[in-house]
Image (cartoon, rainbow, N blue to C red; front, top):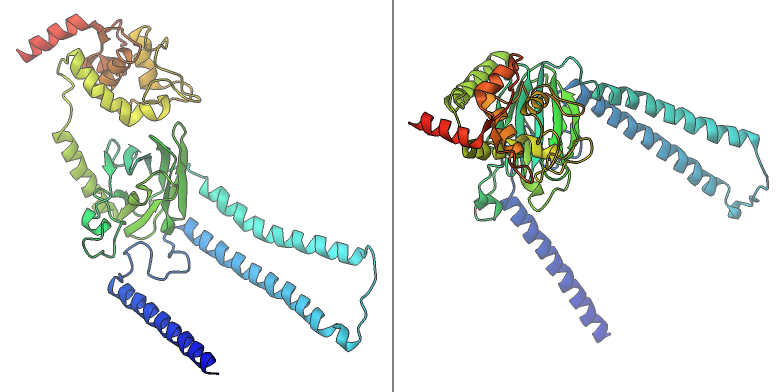
Length: 413
C-alpha cells in the first residue's frame, strides 16, 4: 500500500509539472502575441479571409455550401448507421436480414450521389469558368517569380512601362529573433503591386528559375508561375486598401520570405502614383541618341536578357519547350534585320517586345544575343536603328565591332 501511495504521488507530481510547463508556454506565447495583419491573415482565423472581389465572394459561398452539404451528408449517413445499430441490435431479438440485389437500394445509392455531385459541380464549374475569363482587362501586369522576390511589369493599360522588383522588407533582426515581431511580420515588401479599384486586372505569371505561385486570398486568386510557360488570371478589387498573400509553391530555402502585397488605390490616387513612377523612370531613362560601344551594349544586354528573355530561352541560351535555342541559332547568326523583326513583332510562342522594352534595351539584348555563348557575329545594333525599325525601316546590317568602337570613341570625344 505504501508503494502504491508513493507511485500515486509521483504521478500527481508529474501531472503538476506538465500543467506548469503548459502554463509557461502559454505565457511565452502571450508575450510574443501579435495582432491581425492589416489586409492579411488574422490571429486564430479558421475561415477564409473576407472577400473583396466577386470571384472571392463566389469561392466563399461555394466553400460554405460545400461545408454545409458535407455536414448534412455526414449527419445523415452516420445518423442512419447509429440508429440501425441501436434499434436493430441482437439484444432486442432482431435477426439479420438476408437479401440480394435490391433494385430499390441500387437506384437510391446511384441517384442520390449523382444529384449531390451535380449540386456541387454546377456552381463550382461556374466559378472556375469565371476565374479563367481574362478578356477585356483594364490593366495587364506581368508577374515574374524569382528566388526569392517578385518582379512586376505593367504591360498594358494605365501605368504601361512601369517595372520594378518587390522584395521582403521585414528587418532581418525580426527574422533572426533578435527583435520583437510586428503585425506585418514576413508580410511586408519594399515595392508593393499597385492597382486601381474597380478595374479588371489581368495578371500574367511566369518564373525565372523554379516554380512559384502568386496568391492573394482576399482576391480569390492563386496562379502558378512556371519557368518557360505563361499563365494568366485576373481580379477586380471592389475596396481600396492593402491586401497580402504569399508564394504557395515550395521554391527553395527562402520560400517563406517572398510575400505578395497589393495596394488598391482610388482612380485619382492611382493616377498620381503612375505619374510619380514615370517621373522616377524618366530620370533614369536610357539615352536613345547615344552611340554605344559593343562592350556597353553587351553589358546592358546581359541584364535585359536575364530579366526578360532567360525565363523562356534559359540563361544558357539553350531554349526550352516552344522557345528555341539562341546559342548557334539561325536568328542570332543570321541577318540582323530578321533578328530585330522577331524581337519587335514576335513569332510563334514569343510575344512582341516592342511595347515592353525601349530602344536601348532592344538594341542591347540583340547585340548581346549575337555575341554571346557560341555566337560571335561581332556586329552590334544602335538604339536609333531600333527606332527606325519601329517605323518600318529595318537595318540592312549591324555595325561591325570595330566601327562601333570608333563611334563610341567619337561619341566620348
